[in-house]
Length: 231
Image 1 (tube, one colour):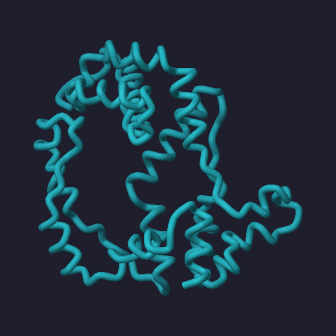
Image 2 (spheres, rainbow, N blue to C red):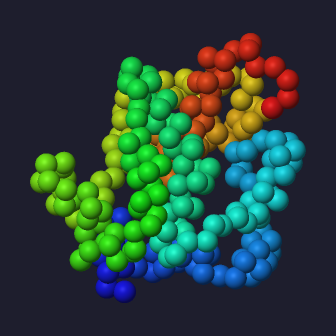
């Protein structure tokens, strides 16, 4: 339990939050299915309601992903994180940002051989005395001491929020004021505009939706007339 506390602090979280994330992996599948079915979840207000209906969004939110059996809970959770849809979205966003700067993004830590090795490593070898990633930290001449001895995970969210508000304030305002017409097939344009205004006014909770909307709008503007057929 003490090790879990140090691990949680590294990620800027709490011990109870870490334990809560593990609950779905410990629950019987039948109980988890019943809980997700009974728990009422509305689609986000900014999603086009017709799109949500045609894609059966509520039913999909209630689905339970199939899980592979692993030797430990940590390996099962790692596999879940690596293969979920959000991970694909994160990498696509990173590749888009890198491409805009003329950089080809690589993912050396997602090499299949490395992932298979780390999934096989016992939990007690992944975290030692509150030190996360001991394998990487203990390898000589790989990381500078300033990085190797970090006690907390770096968080660049505040930097992104600052840059978007200060550097992209006018561009975001104009983009959301005149979004591409096709965007209405996917999002509620008024709700998206309200989210952008709230973010620019200081609401950090709206940073991720605003970023997603901006990426969608810019993609639609670039795609232009090439888009055909229903959403």
